[in-house]
Amino acid sequence: MQAGLINTYQNPMQNRQWPAWALSAALLLSYLALYFTEFFEAPARALGLGGKWTLYGLLYSLAMVVGGAFFLRRHGNSRYQRIRTLSVIFFQVVFAFALPIVMKVFGHQEYYFSYFWPLKIEYLYPDYILRQPFLVVLYSFVGSLIVLPVAGYFLGKRFYCSWICGCGGLANTAGESFRHLSDKSAAAWRFEKHSIYAVLALAIGATIVVGLNWAVGRDHPDFAAFAFRVQQWYGFVVGAFFAGVLGVGLYPLMGTRVWCRFACPMAAVLGLIQKFGRFRITVKPDMCISCGNCSTYCEMGIDVRQYAMANQSFKRAACVGCGMCAHMCPRGVLKLEVRPDRAKGGSPIRVYSVDL
Image 1 (spheres, rainbow, N blue to C red):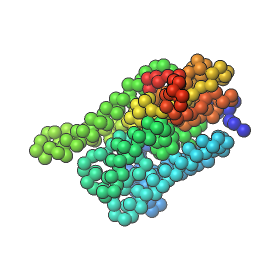
Image 2 (image 1 turned 180 degrees about the vertical axis):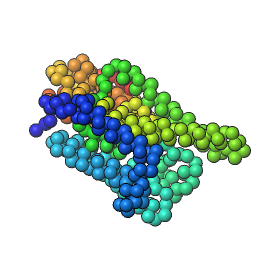
Image 3 (image 1 turned 30 degrees about the horizontal axis):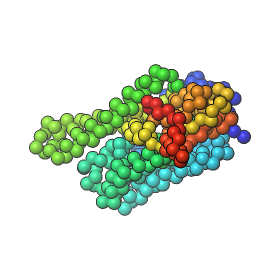
Image 4 (image 1 turned 30 degrees about the vertical axis):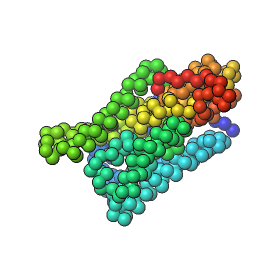
């Protein structure tokens, strides 16, 4: 039986009441301790895990597995949701957790195979590249600069943001209970359009600065010091604070895609490609009953209902293709599709490609 809205707002943990604030505070403090203290080193070594980041990876993967089971119990009647959820859990457990450990066992620097530039910005830093085996470097360049853009054009950003990426994977599994808390206001949309591309610009700028420093830094110590500060502050502000502390810590208060929606540079790149690609959400005309399920369950803050009521099929760069709007629609009004803007006979398809 399809889960609906009947009890979504009745649980204090899901409605920004004091248990939600307490959970958010606990998550924020845990991430602050993880990033900026050695608090988790002792328990990690006591468990034979080598360090706090291995412990974190284990807990992260377990949260996705348990959360995925919970999600599938509610929404596993959809084939698309089953495939999407099992896919993102597989990539987290195997590509982002197990394989990096295997590399360390064989004496190599760990590498997270489910992440790419610009999400993992250091993957194009020269000093990082030079420490990796050739095949890993090739994998990183081909994945970041060729495979992801091409796949984003044909499949939409969902292939990465909802099927592969661990950041989105945690949001769609362990964070499932909080997806309805995403802000659907016009003000949030305006802020999103500025913030996410600003972070993308920072990622590109930091990559260029670090690359130039590798080329000329030995002869220009002042520039080398500047490049080090850029690298350090990007890792601190974007990598640690936004992606980790706020990105997960605010789940119970602002929904599960705070990082993905407002700051992820990979989401920005794939979103731009998606606007000109083949993925869209189509609307069956004159069937929407304005129940609001689609907008409520959109974790990216898209007011899907306004498009359905206006009979407008649409593209949005923010959409991660989770499919929950279509899944929760009681009348089957919405459909995730991949096709050109013109049908086989040449007739145009009415699709609205709107900002972000």
